[in-house]
Image (spheres, rainbow, N blue to C red):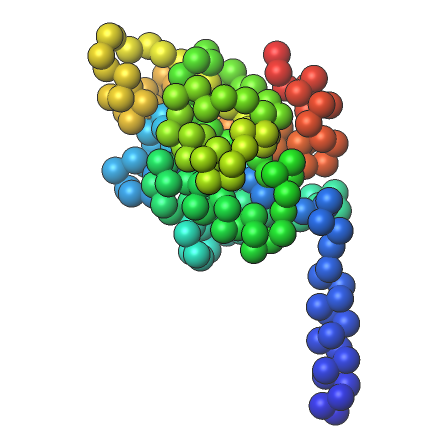
Length: 207
């Protein structure tokens, strides 16, 4: 009986082995503290929450963040919400890339962007941090800016000198009315990136 069980569980472990090219890590950037809930800066968290919600999976607390996994069209899509705070996101990203053995081209960082009109989303295969502390730290830790990112526009409707207050501010009622649709598009773009690739997804969602 013992040998049978060993063979059974060994077989189950073999079945879980997946081609590295079919594994993805999607990182939603944000700050874990409740004070940051429903703020513009946490829209990355909200986007990966939408993916998990649609797939009916729950996040669990783990090393350096909350994680879960979604299966989609033969792919394993690992979702991560770092608990390191925004400006130390690179530590969590690096840890989970190493743990899951995922290369930079198979990660997707989901982030808020002041330079995009509210409601717009933009997928890029690489690029500058553009002043975003989360992207800056990821670039510094990974030693490269050549990793895909999905930017979600939060707009720049603030008075001079009030940028921080705007970014860390709560969504307005008007924004909340539209946010569900925006997060829906972002979640579709995430799944598209993981299933049909960067170029095709950019052509579809970069409008």
